[in-house]
Figure 1 (tube, protein in one colour):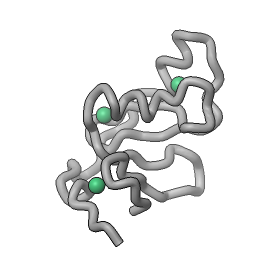
Figure 2 (figure 1 turned 45 degrees about the horizontal axis):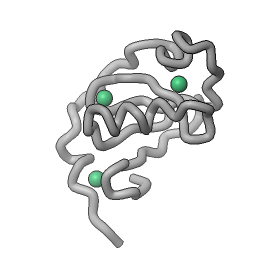
Figure 3 (figure 1 turned 180 degrees about the horizontal axis):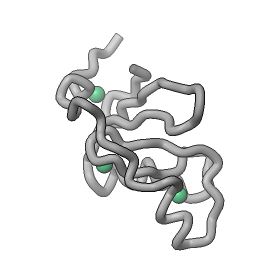
Figure 4 (figure 1 turned 120 degrees about the horizontal axis):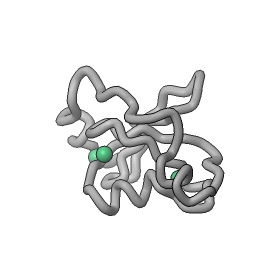
Length: 86
Ligand SMILES: [Zn+2]
Ligand SMILES: [Zn+2]
Ligand SMILES: [Zn+2]
C-alpha cells in the first residue's frame, strides 16, 4: 500500500472551516451533496457526488493535498495526490 507523506505536513491544529457551505456552490446556485474541508487552508468544497466537485477543483487549483469530510459523525481524510484514505 502506498504511503502518504502529505498528512504529516499538514498544519496542526487543523485550520478552521472558512464557511458553512461550499462558497462556489453558493455563488453558482448549485447544491452540494456533501462537504469536504481542505486541511491546508480550511476551504470548504463540495464532494465528487456534487454537480460541480469544488473540493477536487480546489485541489487542482491550489495543489493542497489532503481534505477531510465535513459531514457530522464522519472523520475520514482523503489524499488527492496518493488517492488513499487516511
Ligand atoms: Zn498523500
Ligand atoms: Zn460546490
Ligand atoms: Zn486548500
